[in-house]
Image (cartoon, rainbow, N blue to C red; front, top):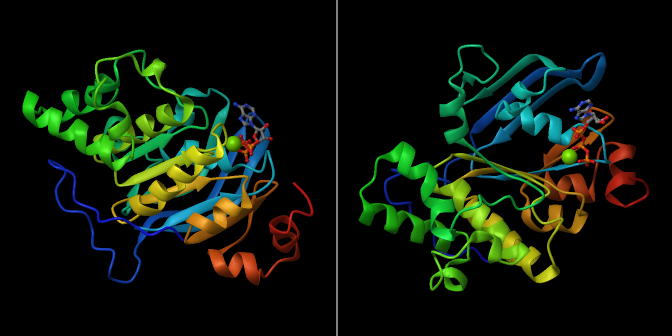
Amino acid sequence: MPQSASVTNAPFHGESPSSESAPEVCVKIANFNAWYDSFQAIHDLSLDILRNQVTAFIGPSGCGKSTLLRWVNRMNDIVPTAQCTGSLRINDVEVLSPSTDVVHLRRQVGMVFQKPNPFPKSIYENVAFAPRLHLKLRRGELDELVEWALRKAAVWDEVKDRLNAPAFGLSGGQQQRLCIARAIAIGPELLLMDEPCSALDPASTLAIEDLIYELREQYTIVMVTHNMQQASRCSDQTAFFFEGRLIESGATDDVFTKPQQKRTDDYVRGRFG
Ligand SMILES: Nc1ncnc2c1ncn2[C@@H]1O[C@H](COP(=O)(O)OP(=O)(O)OP(=O)(O)O)[C@@H](O)[C@H]1O
Ligand SMILES: [Mg+2]
């Protein structure tokens, strides 16, 4: 496991939960089913995501990993054919309730995608945009927050002299770290990362893995990955999905070294998928 560097709280975000006590449940998923039209993509899935831990979602293509993530921050609201039943609670608040404030939810749940998707704005603005809207900070405070987020995402040294340059001028790995900075700047408590390294070179991948491992001291992280070494290197918990069902979940070391299910064993050993 990478060494974690010292972590300081974000300015303006308040205290983070202590990571020293026994892990608490951050997201409680119970009897969750999801469909696209009549196709059932997720079947009766129940899973606890633990606070201040990295949980890796693994499983072959099409097994429902992204579908589940998209329901956690209600991104599937904009897919007309998408429907679900069951319960999905963050800190005991039902995400799927019609009364859920989706704007508040998206501040609570940051999302990082497979392909870096910076806004067509400057590096500074990519990070400052949402905090300016939601946190009502003065210019100096905003500068401080932008620097904090870029440092935390391990990209500050590479961009500090060109904060006003377009984000599109950065390399893919730098853009991805900028997107992580953007995601954490608003002070989420849960970070969802859908194959965050799959478009990156090995050096950028390692930088982001180190970062994910460090960030878990302040955030709860769910990371989808097809890379078994990555899951075993930087996650605490692993959940294995197959054909829309959760087959097995638990401490990453257990899932990789003594899985309970043959299908998990076959998958983590690379026998299929
Ligand atoms: N918008 C959509 N409309 C219809 N079917 C969809 C839609 N999105 C996903 N699906 C289907 O739902 C199933 C689960 O897809 P999902 O994207 O969640 O898989 P995944 O585990 O993330 O796969 P991958 O590892 O390839 O990203 C697949 O059969 C997929 O084709
Ligand atoms: Mg996916």
